Length: 357
Image (cartoon, rainbow, N blue to C red; front, top):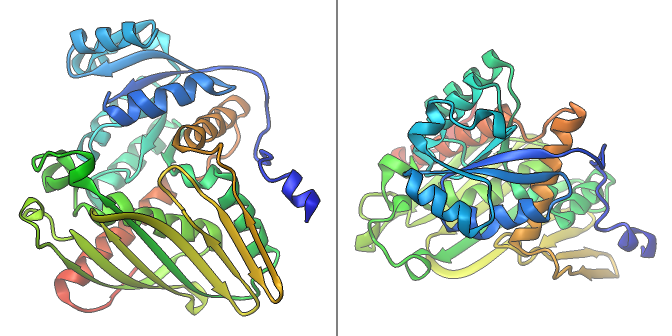
């Protein structure tokens, strides 16, 4: 166990320690500027060379404030401006705008790291994958939990049989969105920009995708219920959401999420012989709790806040590009999440289970 603890933060995925990927960051909201940008600048294999925003003035101002060489507008990006100054793009815009920037990047032969969920609808996500495959450009979906050491170690333990056969999963992710961003007209509450809804698209996806990664299995059917009572959530169906997902091998998962609740995140996987819990699980910190028989172990790594998680994610992406290695999670992996999300919303609307093809 001591040897396992010593290797806890080891980058088992890393294939190179040299080279640099230059990024253009698209969509300069607080997450991009306060988390993604410093994460790249702290990373081993990346640097930010271009910022892209709604106007040249805003992009240039933020570039100057953050010591980035160049700032350009969205229109200038689409026209190919500064295309020789970056190797890859990071897309951090509202969901419904992802596709247009990916399409331009594909035309410019640039690699793409796109925030989750990958688009607002399944059809637009399919178009994104088709575009990247036709242009033969790398596409990765930004599931930062997949490079968090707690999640990677948990995946190894499950594969090694620590919990026996997986039986059930409980995932929970909530936050008080209107306290964090006190604007009822924000894009996460606008279905034209967010997509199917708000809580499952933005929060529930963490539990679902992390479970897919941990178990190396996918859901085959879902049954969901949703409700929106607060007036700010009047245009989206899922202020609150609860879902039952049946995974391959009859593993049962319960997932709950809400954008209007006390902040809380956890993910618990119970097997025939033991249990693994991530608590807290998602919002920038992740602790691992292990139980089996008389054994009970808790591993915390306070250094892994959201910025450190993003640093790992960017270095993983750069490592894949520099060594021409296979990307996981790629576009087709993200596409499966979009199928699941669409099925969850369809189930809630119909009031019955929905199978996933």
